[in-house]
Amino acid sequence: MKIIADENMPYVEQVFADIGEVSLVNGRQLSAEQLEGADVLLVRSVTQVNAQLLAHNDSLKFVGSATIGTDHIDTQLLAQKGIPFSNAPGCNAIAVGEYAFIAMLELAAMTGSSLKQRTVGIVGAGNTGSQVARCLEAYGVKTLLCDPVLAASGDSREFHSLDQLIASCDVISLHVPLTKDGIEPTWYLLDEARLSALKPDAWLLNCCRGEVIDNRALIRVKQQRADLRLVLDVWEGEPNPMPELVPLVDIATPHIAGYSLEGKARGTTMLHSALSQVLNIEPENKLDGLLPVHVFSRIKLENQPDESALLQLCRLIYDLRDDDRKFRANYALAGGFDQLRKNHTHRREFSALALVKGSGFEVDWLTKLGFSGASL
Ligand SMILES: NC(=O)c1ccc[n+]([C@@H]2O[C@H](COP(=O)([O-])OP(=O)(O)OC[C@H]3O[C@@H](n4cnc5c(N)ncnc54)[C@H](O)[C@@H]3O)[C@@H](O)[C@H]2O)c1
Ligand SMILES: O=C(O)[C@H](O)[C@H](O)COP(=O)(O)O
Image (cartoon, rainbow, N blue to C red; front, side):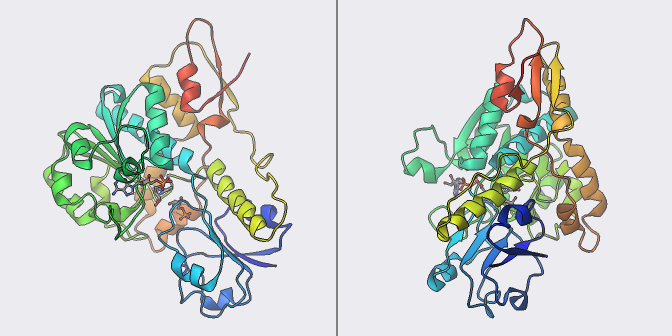
């Protein structure tokens, strides 16, 4: 089988070797000509899978996207052509949850305040939003959820409206898909009125899709409101963030919130399972043994970590300040945004680090946060 895969898909050649020959391509530049004769197409969010891309191909048996979002896929067209499609829901949710949690700890350190004193509003309580809530709740931070879609579907959690969250939360973290129609469209969900209504000293995080915030309105509001703190991993108009916006942002990264090695590997192996099912091949667990041991495999805690020690511990797994520095230095260069993503050194998830505790204090909350437990 001829498999065309995005070059930024760790382990893809290894994982798919039993099904066919994998050719790696630049996903943003993939052309209809390159796709001619391919049986399988494996993409990431930068490839628009549409009629134009499929124009010279009549052999595709499967399209997979190793992502949660599907706004780059014309799923209707694939259905019409009878081409099975699968994405990888949840593959990088832990990575996004940990990114948002670490970003909030960084903001607390930056502003000399405490995350624990804040109430965090999570907009979109699906895979990624729930992981943010899990981290915050493990640490003892109050969270409020907004998800009218899940609320209407009978989800038993307590939900609030977006405007209630904006009025009452000190932090707003966005975790919705990008949708232009339907009953709850998210395009420019945070418009100028809602941005202006954020509480004094509020923090706003966007780890879902850039266009969920009206970025021009954000520039106008932030120019009037120095009190607001911003964490942006996604940008309107990627790969070209608005240059006036970047200096106004406290933590800026190039759409890598989901880029943990575990998350990427899960994305690849989930697509392998989906394709195996389509081809009627016995699915294998390919994730076991794929990931290397983390450089710090275990750490001994002598005391209960306070917020500052917790941040130090998190930085052993992921020091967000490195990505922020690289972003500012490179995003405006030609191809800079995509190069940052391509060359990103995949971080690990909390679970890669085992904590050994000294006697006389509890670390249950740290294992709930995601770290592994270990005995001496
Ligand atoms: N930055 C990154 O690296 C990264 C990584 C993963 C996902 N994402 C983006 O984040 C999005 C969310 O990911 P997920 O895995 O949590 O998806 P998900 O489908 O599991 O959850 C999204 C939730 O948003 C809710 N929702 C939809 N419209 C809403 C609205 N108007 N208001 C409030 N809630 C609404 C849905 O009901 C759903 O529960 C993805 O679609 C993707 O675009 C970004
Ligand atoms: O939708 C997703 O899963 C994320 O946005 C994903 O991390 C995007 O990464 P990409 O596919 O562009 O590498």
